[in-house]
Length: 140
Image 1: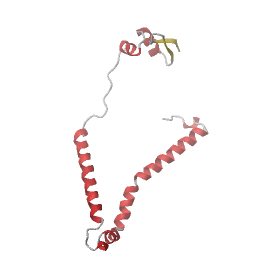
Image 2 (image 1 turned 180 degrees about the horizontal axis):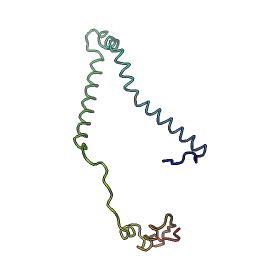
Image 3 (image 1 turned 90 degrees about the horizontal axis):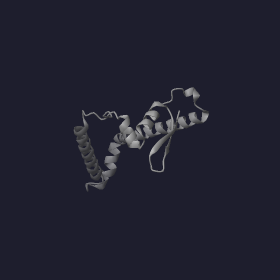
Image 4 (image 1 turned 180 degrees about the vertical axis):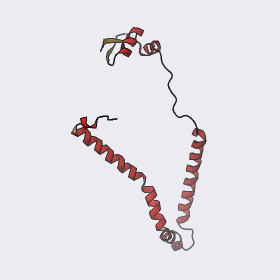
């Protein structure tokens, strides 16, 4: 997060604005199926006439549309119900267990003293020795 936006350069502001506009356009794009549904609902009689009545009772393409819509609704309703039963009311994020300095040092292949020095400073220059273990060159 940007805490001090006045410190941004013009290029950073331009990039941020571009990303924001793209995100808003994507959000509007997500609403297009609902807009299409509304437009289709207003033209429902015309769709019924074009897809069914003009076919002189042979079932027309409207039956295929209805069957596909029913199958999609059934699949998505089943899937969302399954996910609701599986995940509803459960904690989604669990806290991490605290890790000791000795475990951290063992994980990175450093000594406990080096791990303590790295932990005590904001920045540290770390190098990898020939044997593959990490060492702290200079802690700042």
